[in-house]
Image (tube, rainbow, N blue to C red; front, side, top):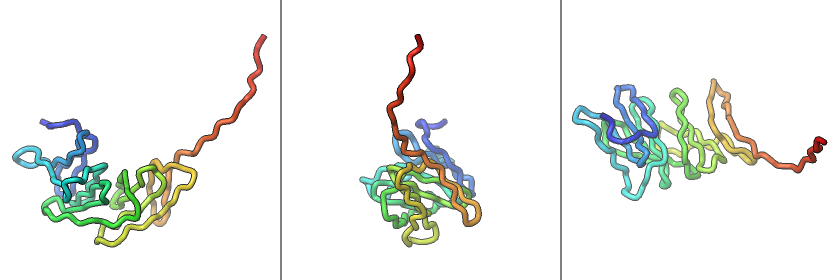
Length: 154
């Protein structure tokens, strides 16, 4: 039984099932049922979550937090701006700022600052992927409207 509707479901390398509910709660499946994972600060509300290997990554207004799914110690990842959406591509993690204006490559090794890899001036970032040293970025253009004269049929 699933206790609440999920927005995101992820599975770790160890087979841990983690869900992000529509009510912005993080739940982990255990033998006893579904347990809520508490945030490091009570005022932090998750905006998105991903699992890579056996690590949980959560973005909040206060920053990006990570922890090993079997341990309880949270580590904060430094990012220059508030990240609203996490994109997982294989073993890589990218963060998109709340208005889709920049992409960060999230540092998953330590608490060091993550790197801004793209600054969108007139676009909104929708998705990213990478192959080798190439970063592929899907953007939504900034559309402009112009008046157009339409001939009337008689």
